Length: 493
Image 1: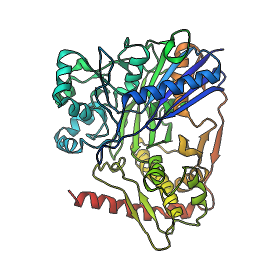
Image 2: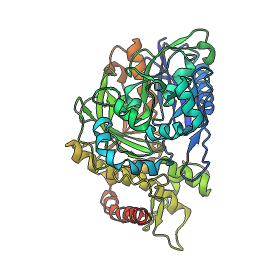
Image 3: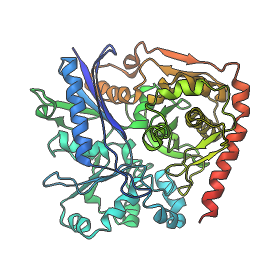
Image 4: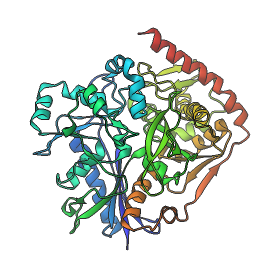
């Protein structure tokens, strides 16, 4: 039986699926990845935790499936930077996660270069991306010395996994991940010598860039509990993988993924979209896995706000609890939560913003906090979508969605209400992993074409209900809360 092992190494956990050619999930594994917050604004992972959790999840999925996969597809949290010794494969310190803000001051100082950076990379100078993370690491003498003597290797999480799966034989990434580093020229499709010079990055430390649907070497079977090595044929950053998994291969098609953050992508085909208004231009995939372009709006905190309610405040025991709490209120009673816990992304791009809660009274309960966290995901999505429709010169007649938070029925109904258009949730919410499987499986012949890969996908449709008018009017309160957040950040400089 032909099948694909899909590896999805995300920010909070690693999910691995074994997906058959007919679309059935034959096996599943998951491991939570520990997070580290050594200082305010610093977010880190242990690279060996990323690797161990991913391998454990993969072995679990393979064991429960009872099959040997034809190929492997990898998708990953983007922008997170990992350094290691290419001779020993030992990591150099912790990985700096995409949420990390330690280089905010440096990014502000890059303002004179912002136009040039945007023209080359489609990105804005922001700590979100990998370039200033790598520059910061190279400012340490021992790291700079390793770069000079040729022992330093760098990469995003996909590159770290490929390196270890292949026993150090392959140091590679794909265009979707490369386009998130702020070092890759998306027009020339190569590392930019100009930007490497600007950030002081030696070309030799960076991986080779290979097509998203192509040969990335062979994973050692011994690492996966298998008797044979398995080829890796697909790699993409998580949001581009989700776009592919949703079947958004043509210009004008888009989706939103609700994970730790939320990410809207609009495929613009062979044309580089009109970035601006808080939107980025990034590299995506066409139906064959070849490079295409997309507009992207990144909301830094979505599901992470619910996680904060659970782990930081302790006012909920689990994320699903927010559904019943929110449904138990007839309105938000004027309580809004702007979860700028790591700054604000699109459409504002304010790295100094911090979380704001407004409208509290003696009658405020934990249910209001839960509802406000869910509403924030929906309102922020509409804010980005408004700009995206203008910049992309198109109208969404529906929004396809995926990610863990889409399991929250209350949120999906509210999202449809505040958008005013249907929201379509696929029968398989883990579209990120599915996209990685598709890129690998099409290259390996598991599916003869992209359309065959989509097969008989089904969607649950959430249509705007009687509360749509009230939900859309409540955006005025959200807008006031966002203005308060931005004002505080800018006045504090």
